[in-house]
Image 1: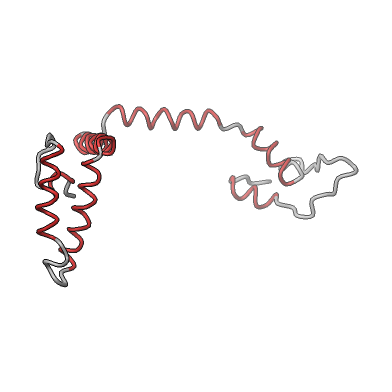
Image 2: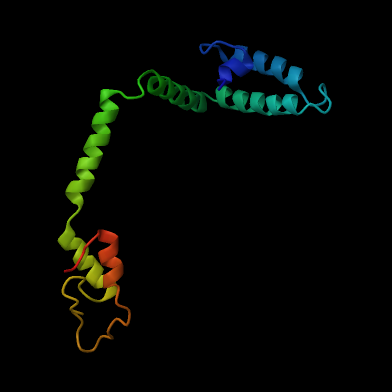
Length: 146
């Protein structure tokens, strides 16, 4: 993938005036009127416009530079220890948050009965759940009854 700097053929430390001059040069080179019917030139013209609008705005340029630096860092160290450590911490946090009892209570509240005891747990004035989802629940979680 080419960067915006490569599209405009400038250095990443280019000044706003250099960016503007490069944009005018590249826009003229790839303008659809100058390259009648060329889809590639039309595409490059759009990309050059996008590059100029991003690099000419100081805030957008800073955000773009930060994204590019992060991408280069990721490409340089795809399996870095910090990335692996972060993924491990996320997995540990997710597994520690899983509580089977709480899940069963949620299931009970949602479907209207407890999956293990099949107790409806409803008050006498509440309607009973007409659908028994015990088999679905058991097959999903791999529970086998004897």
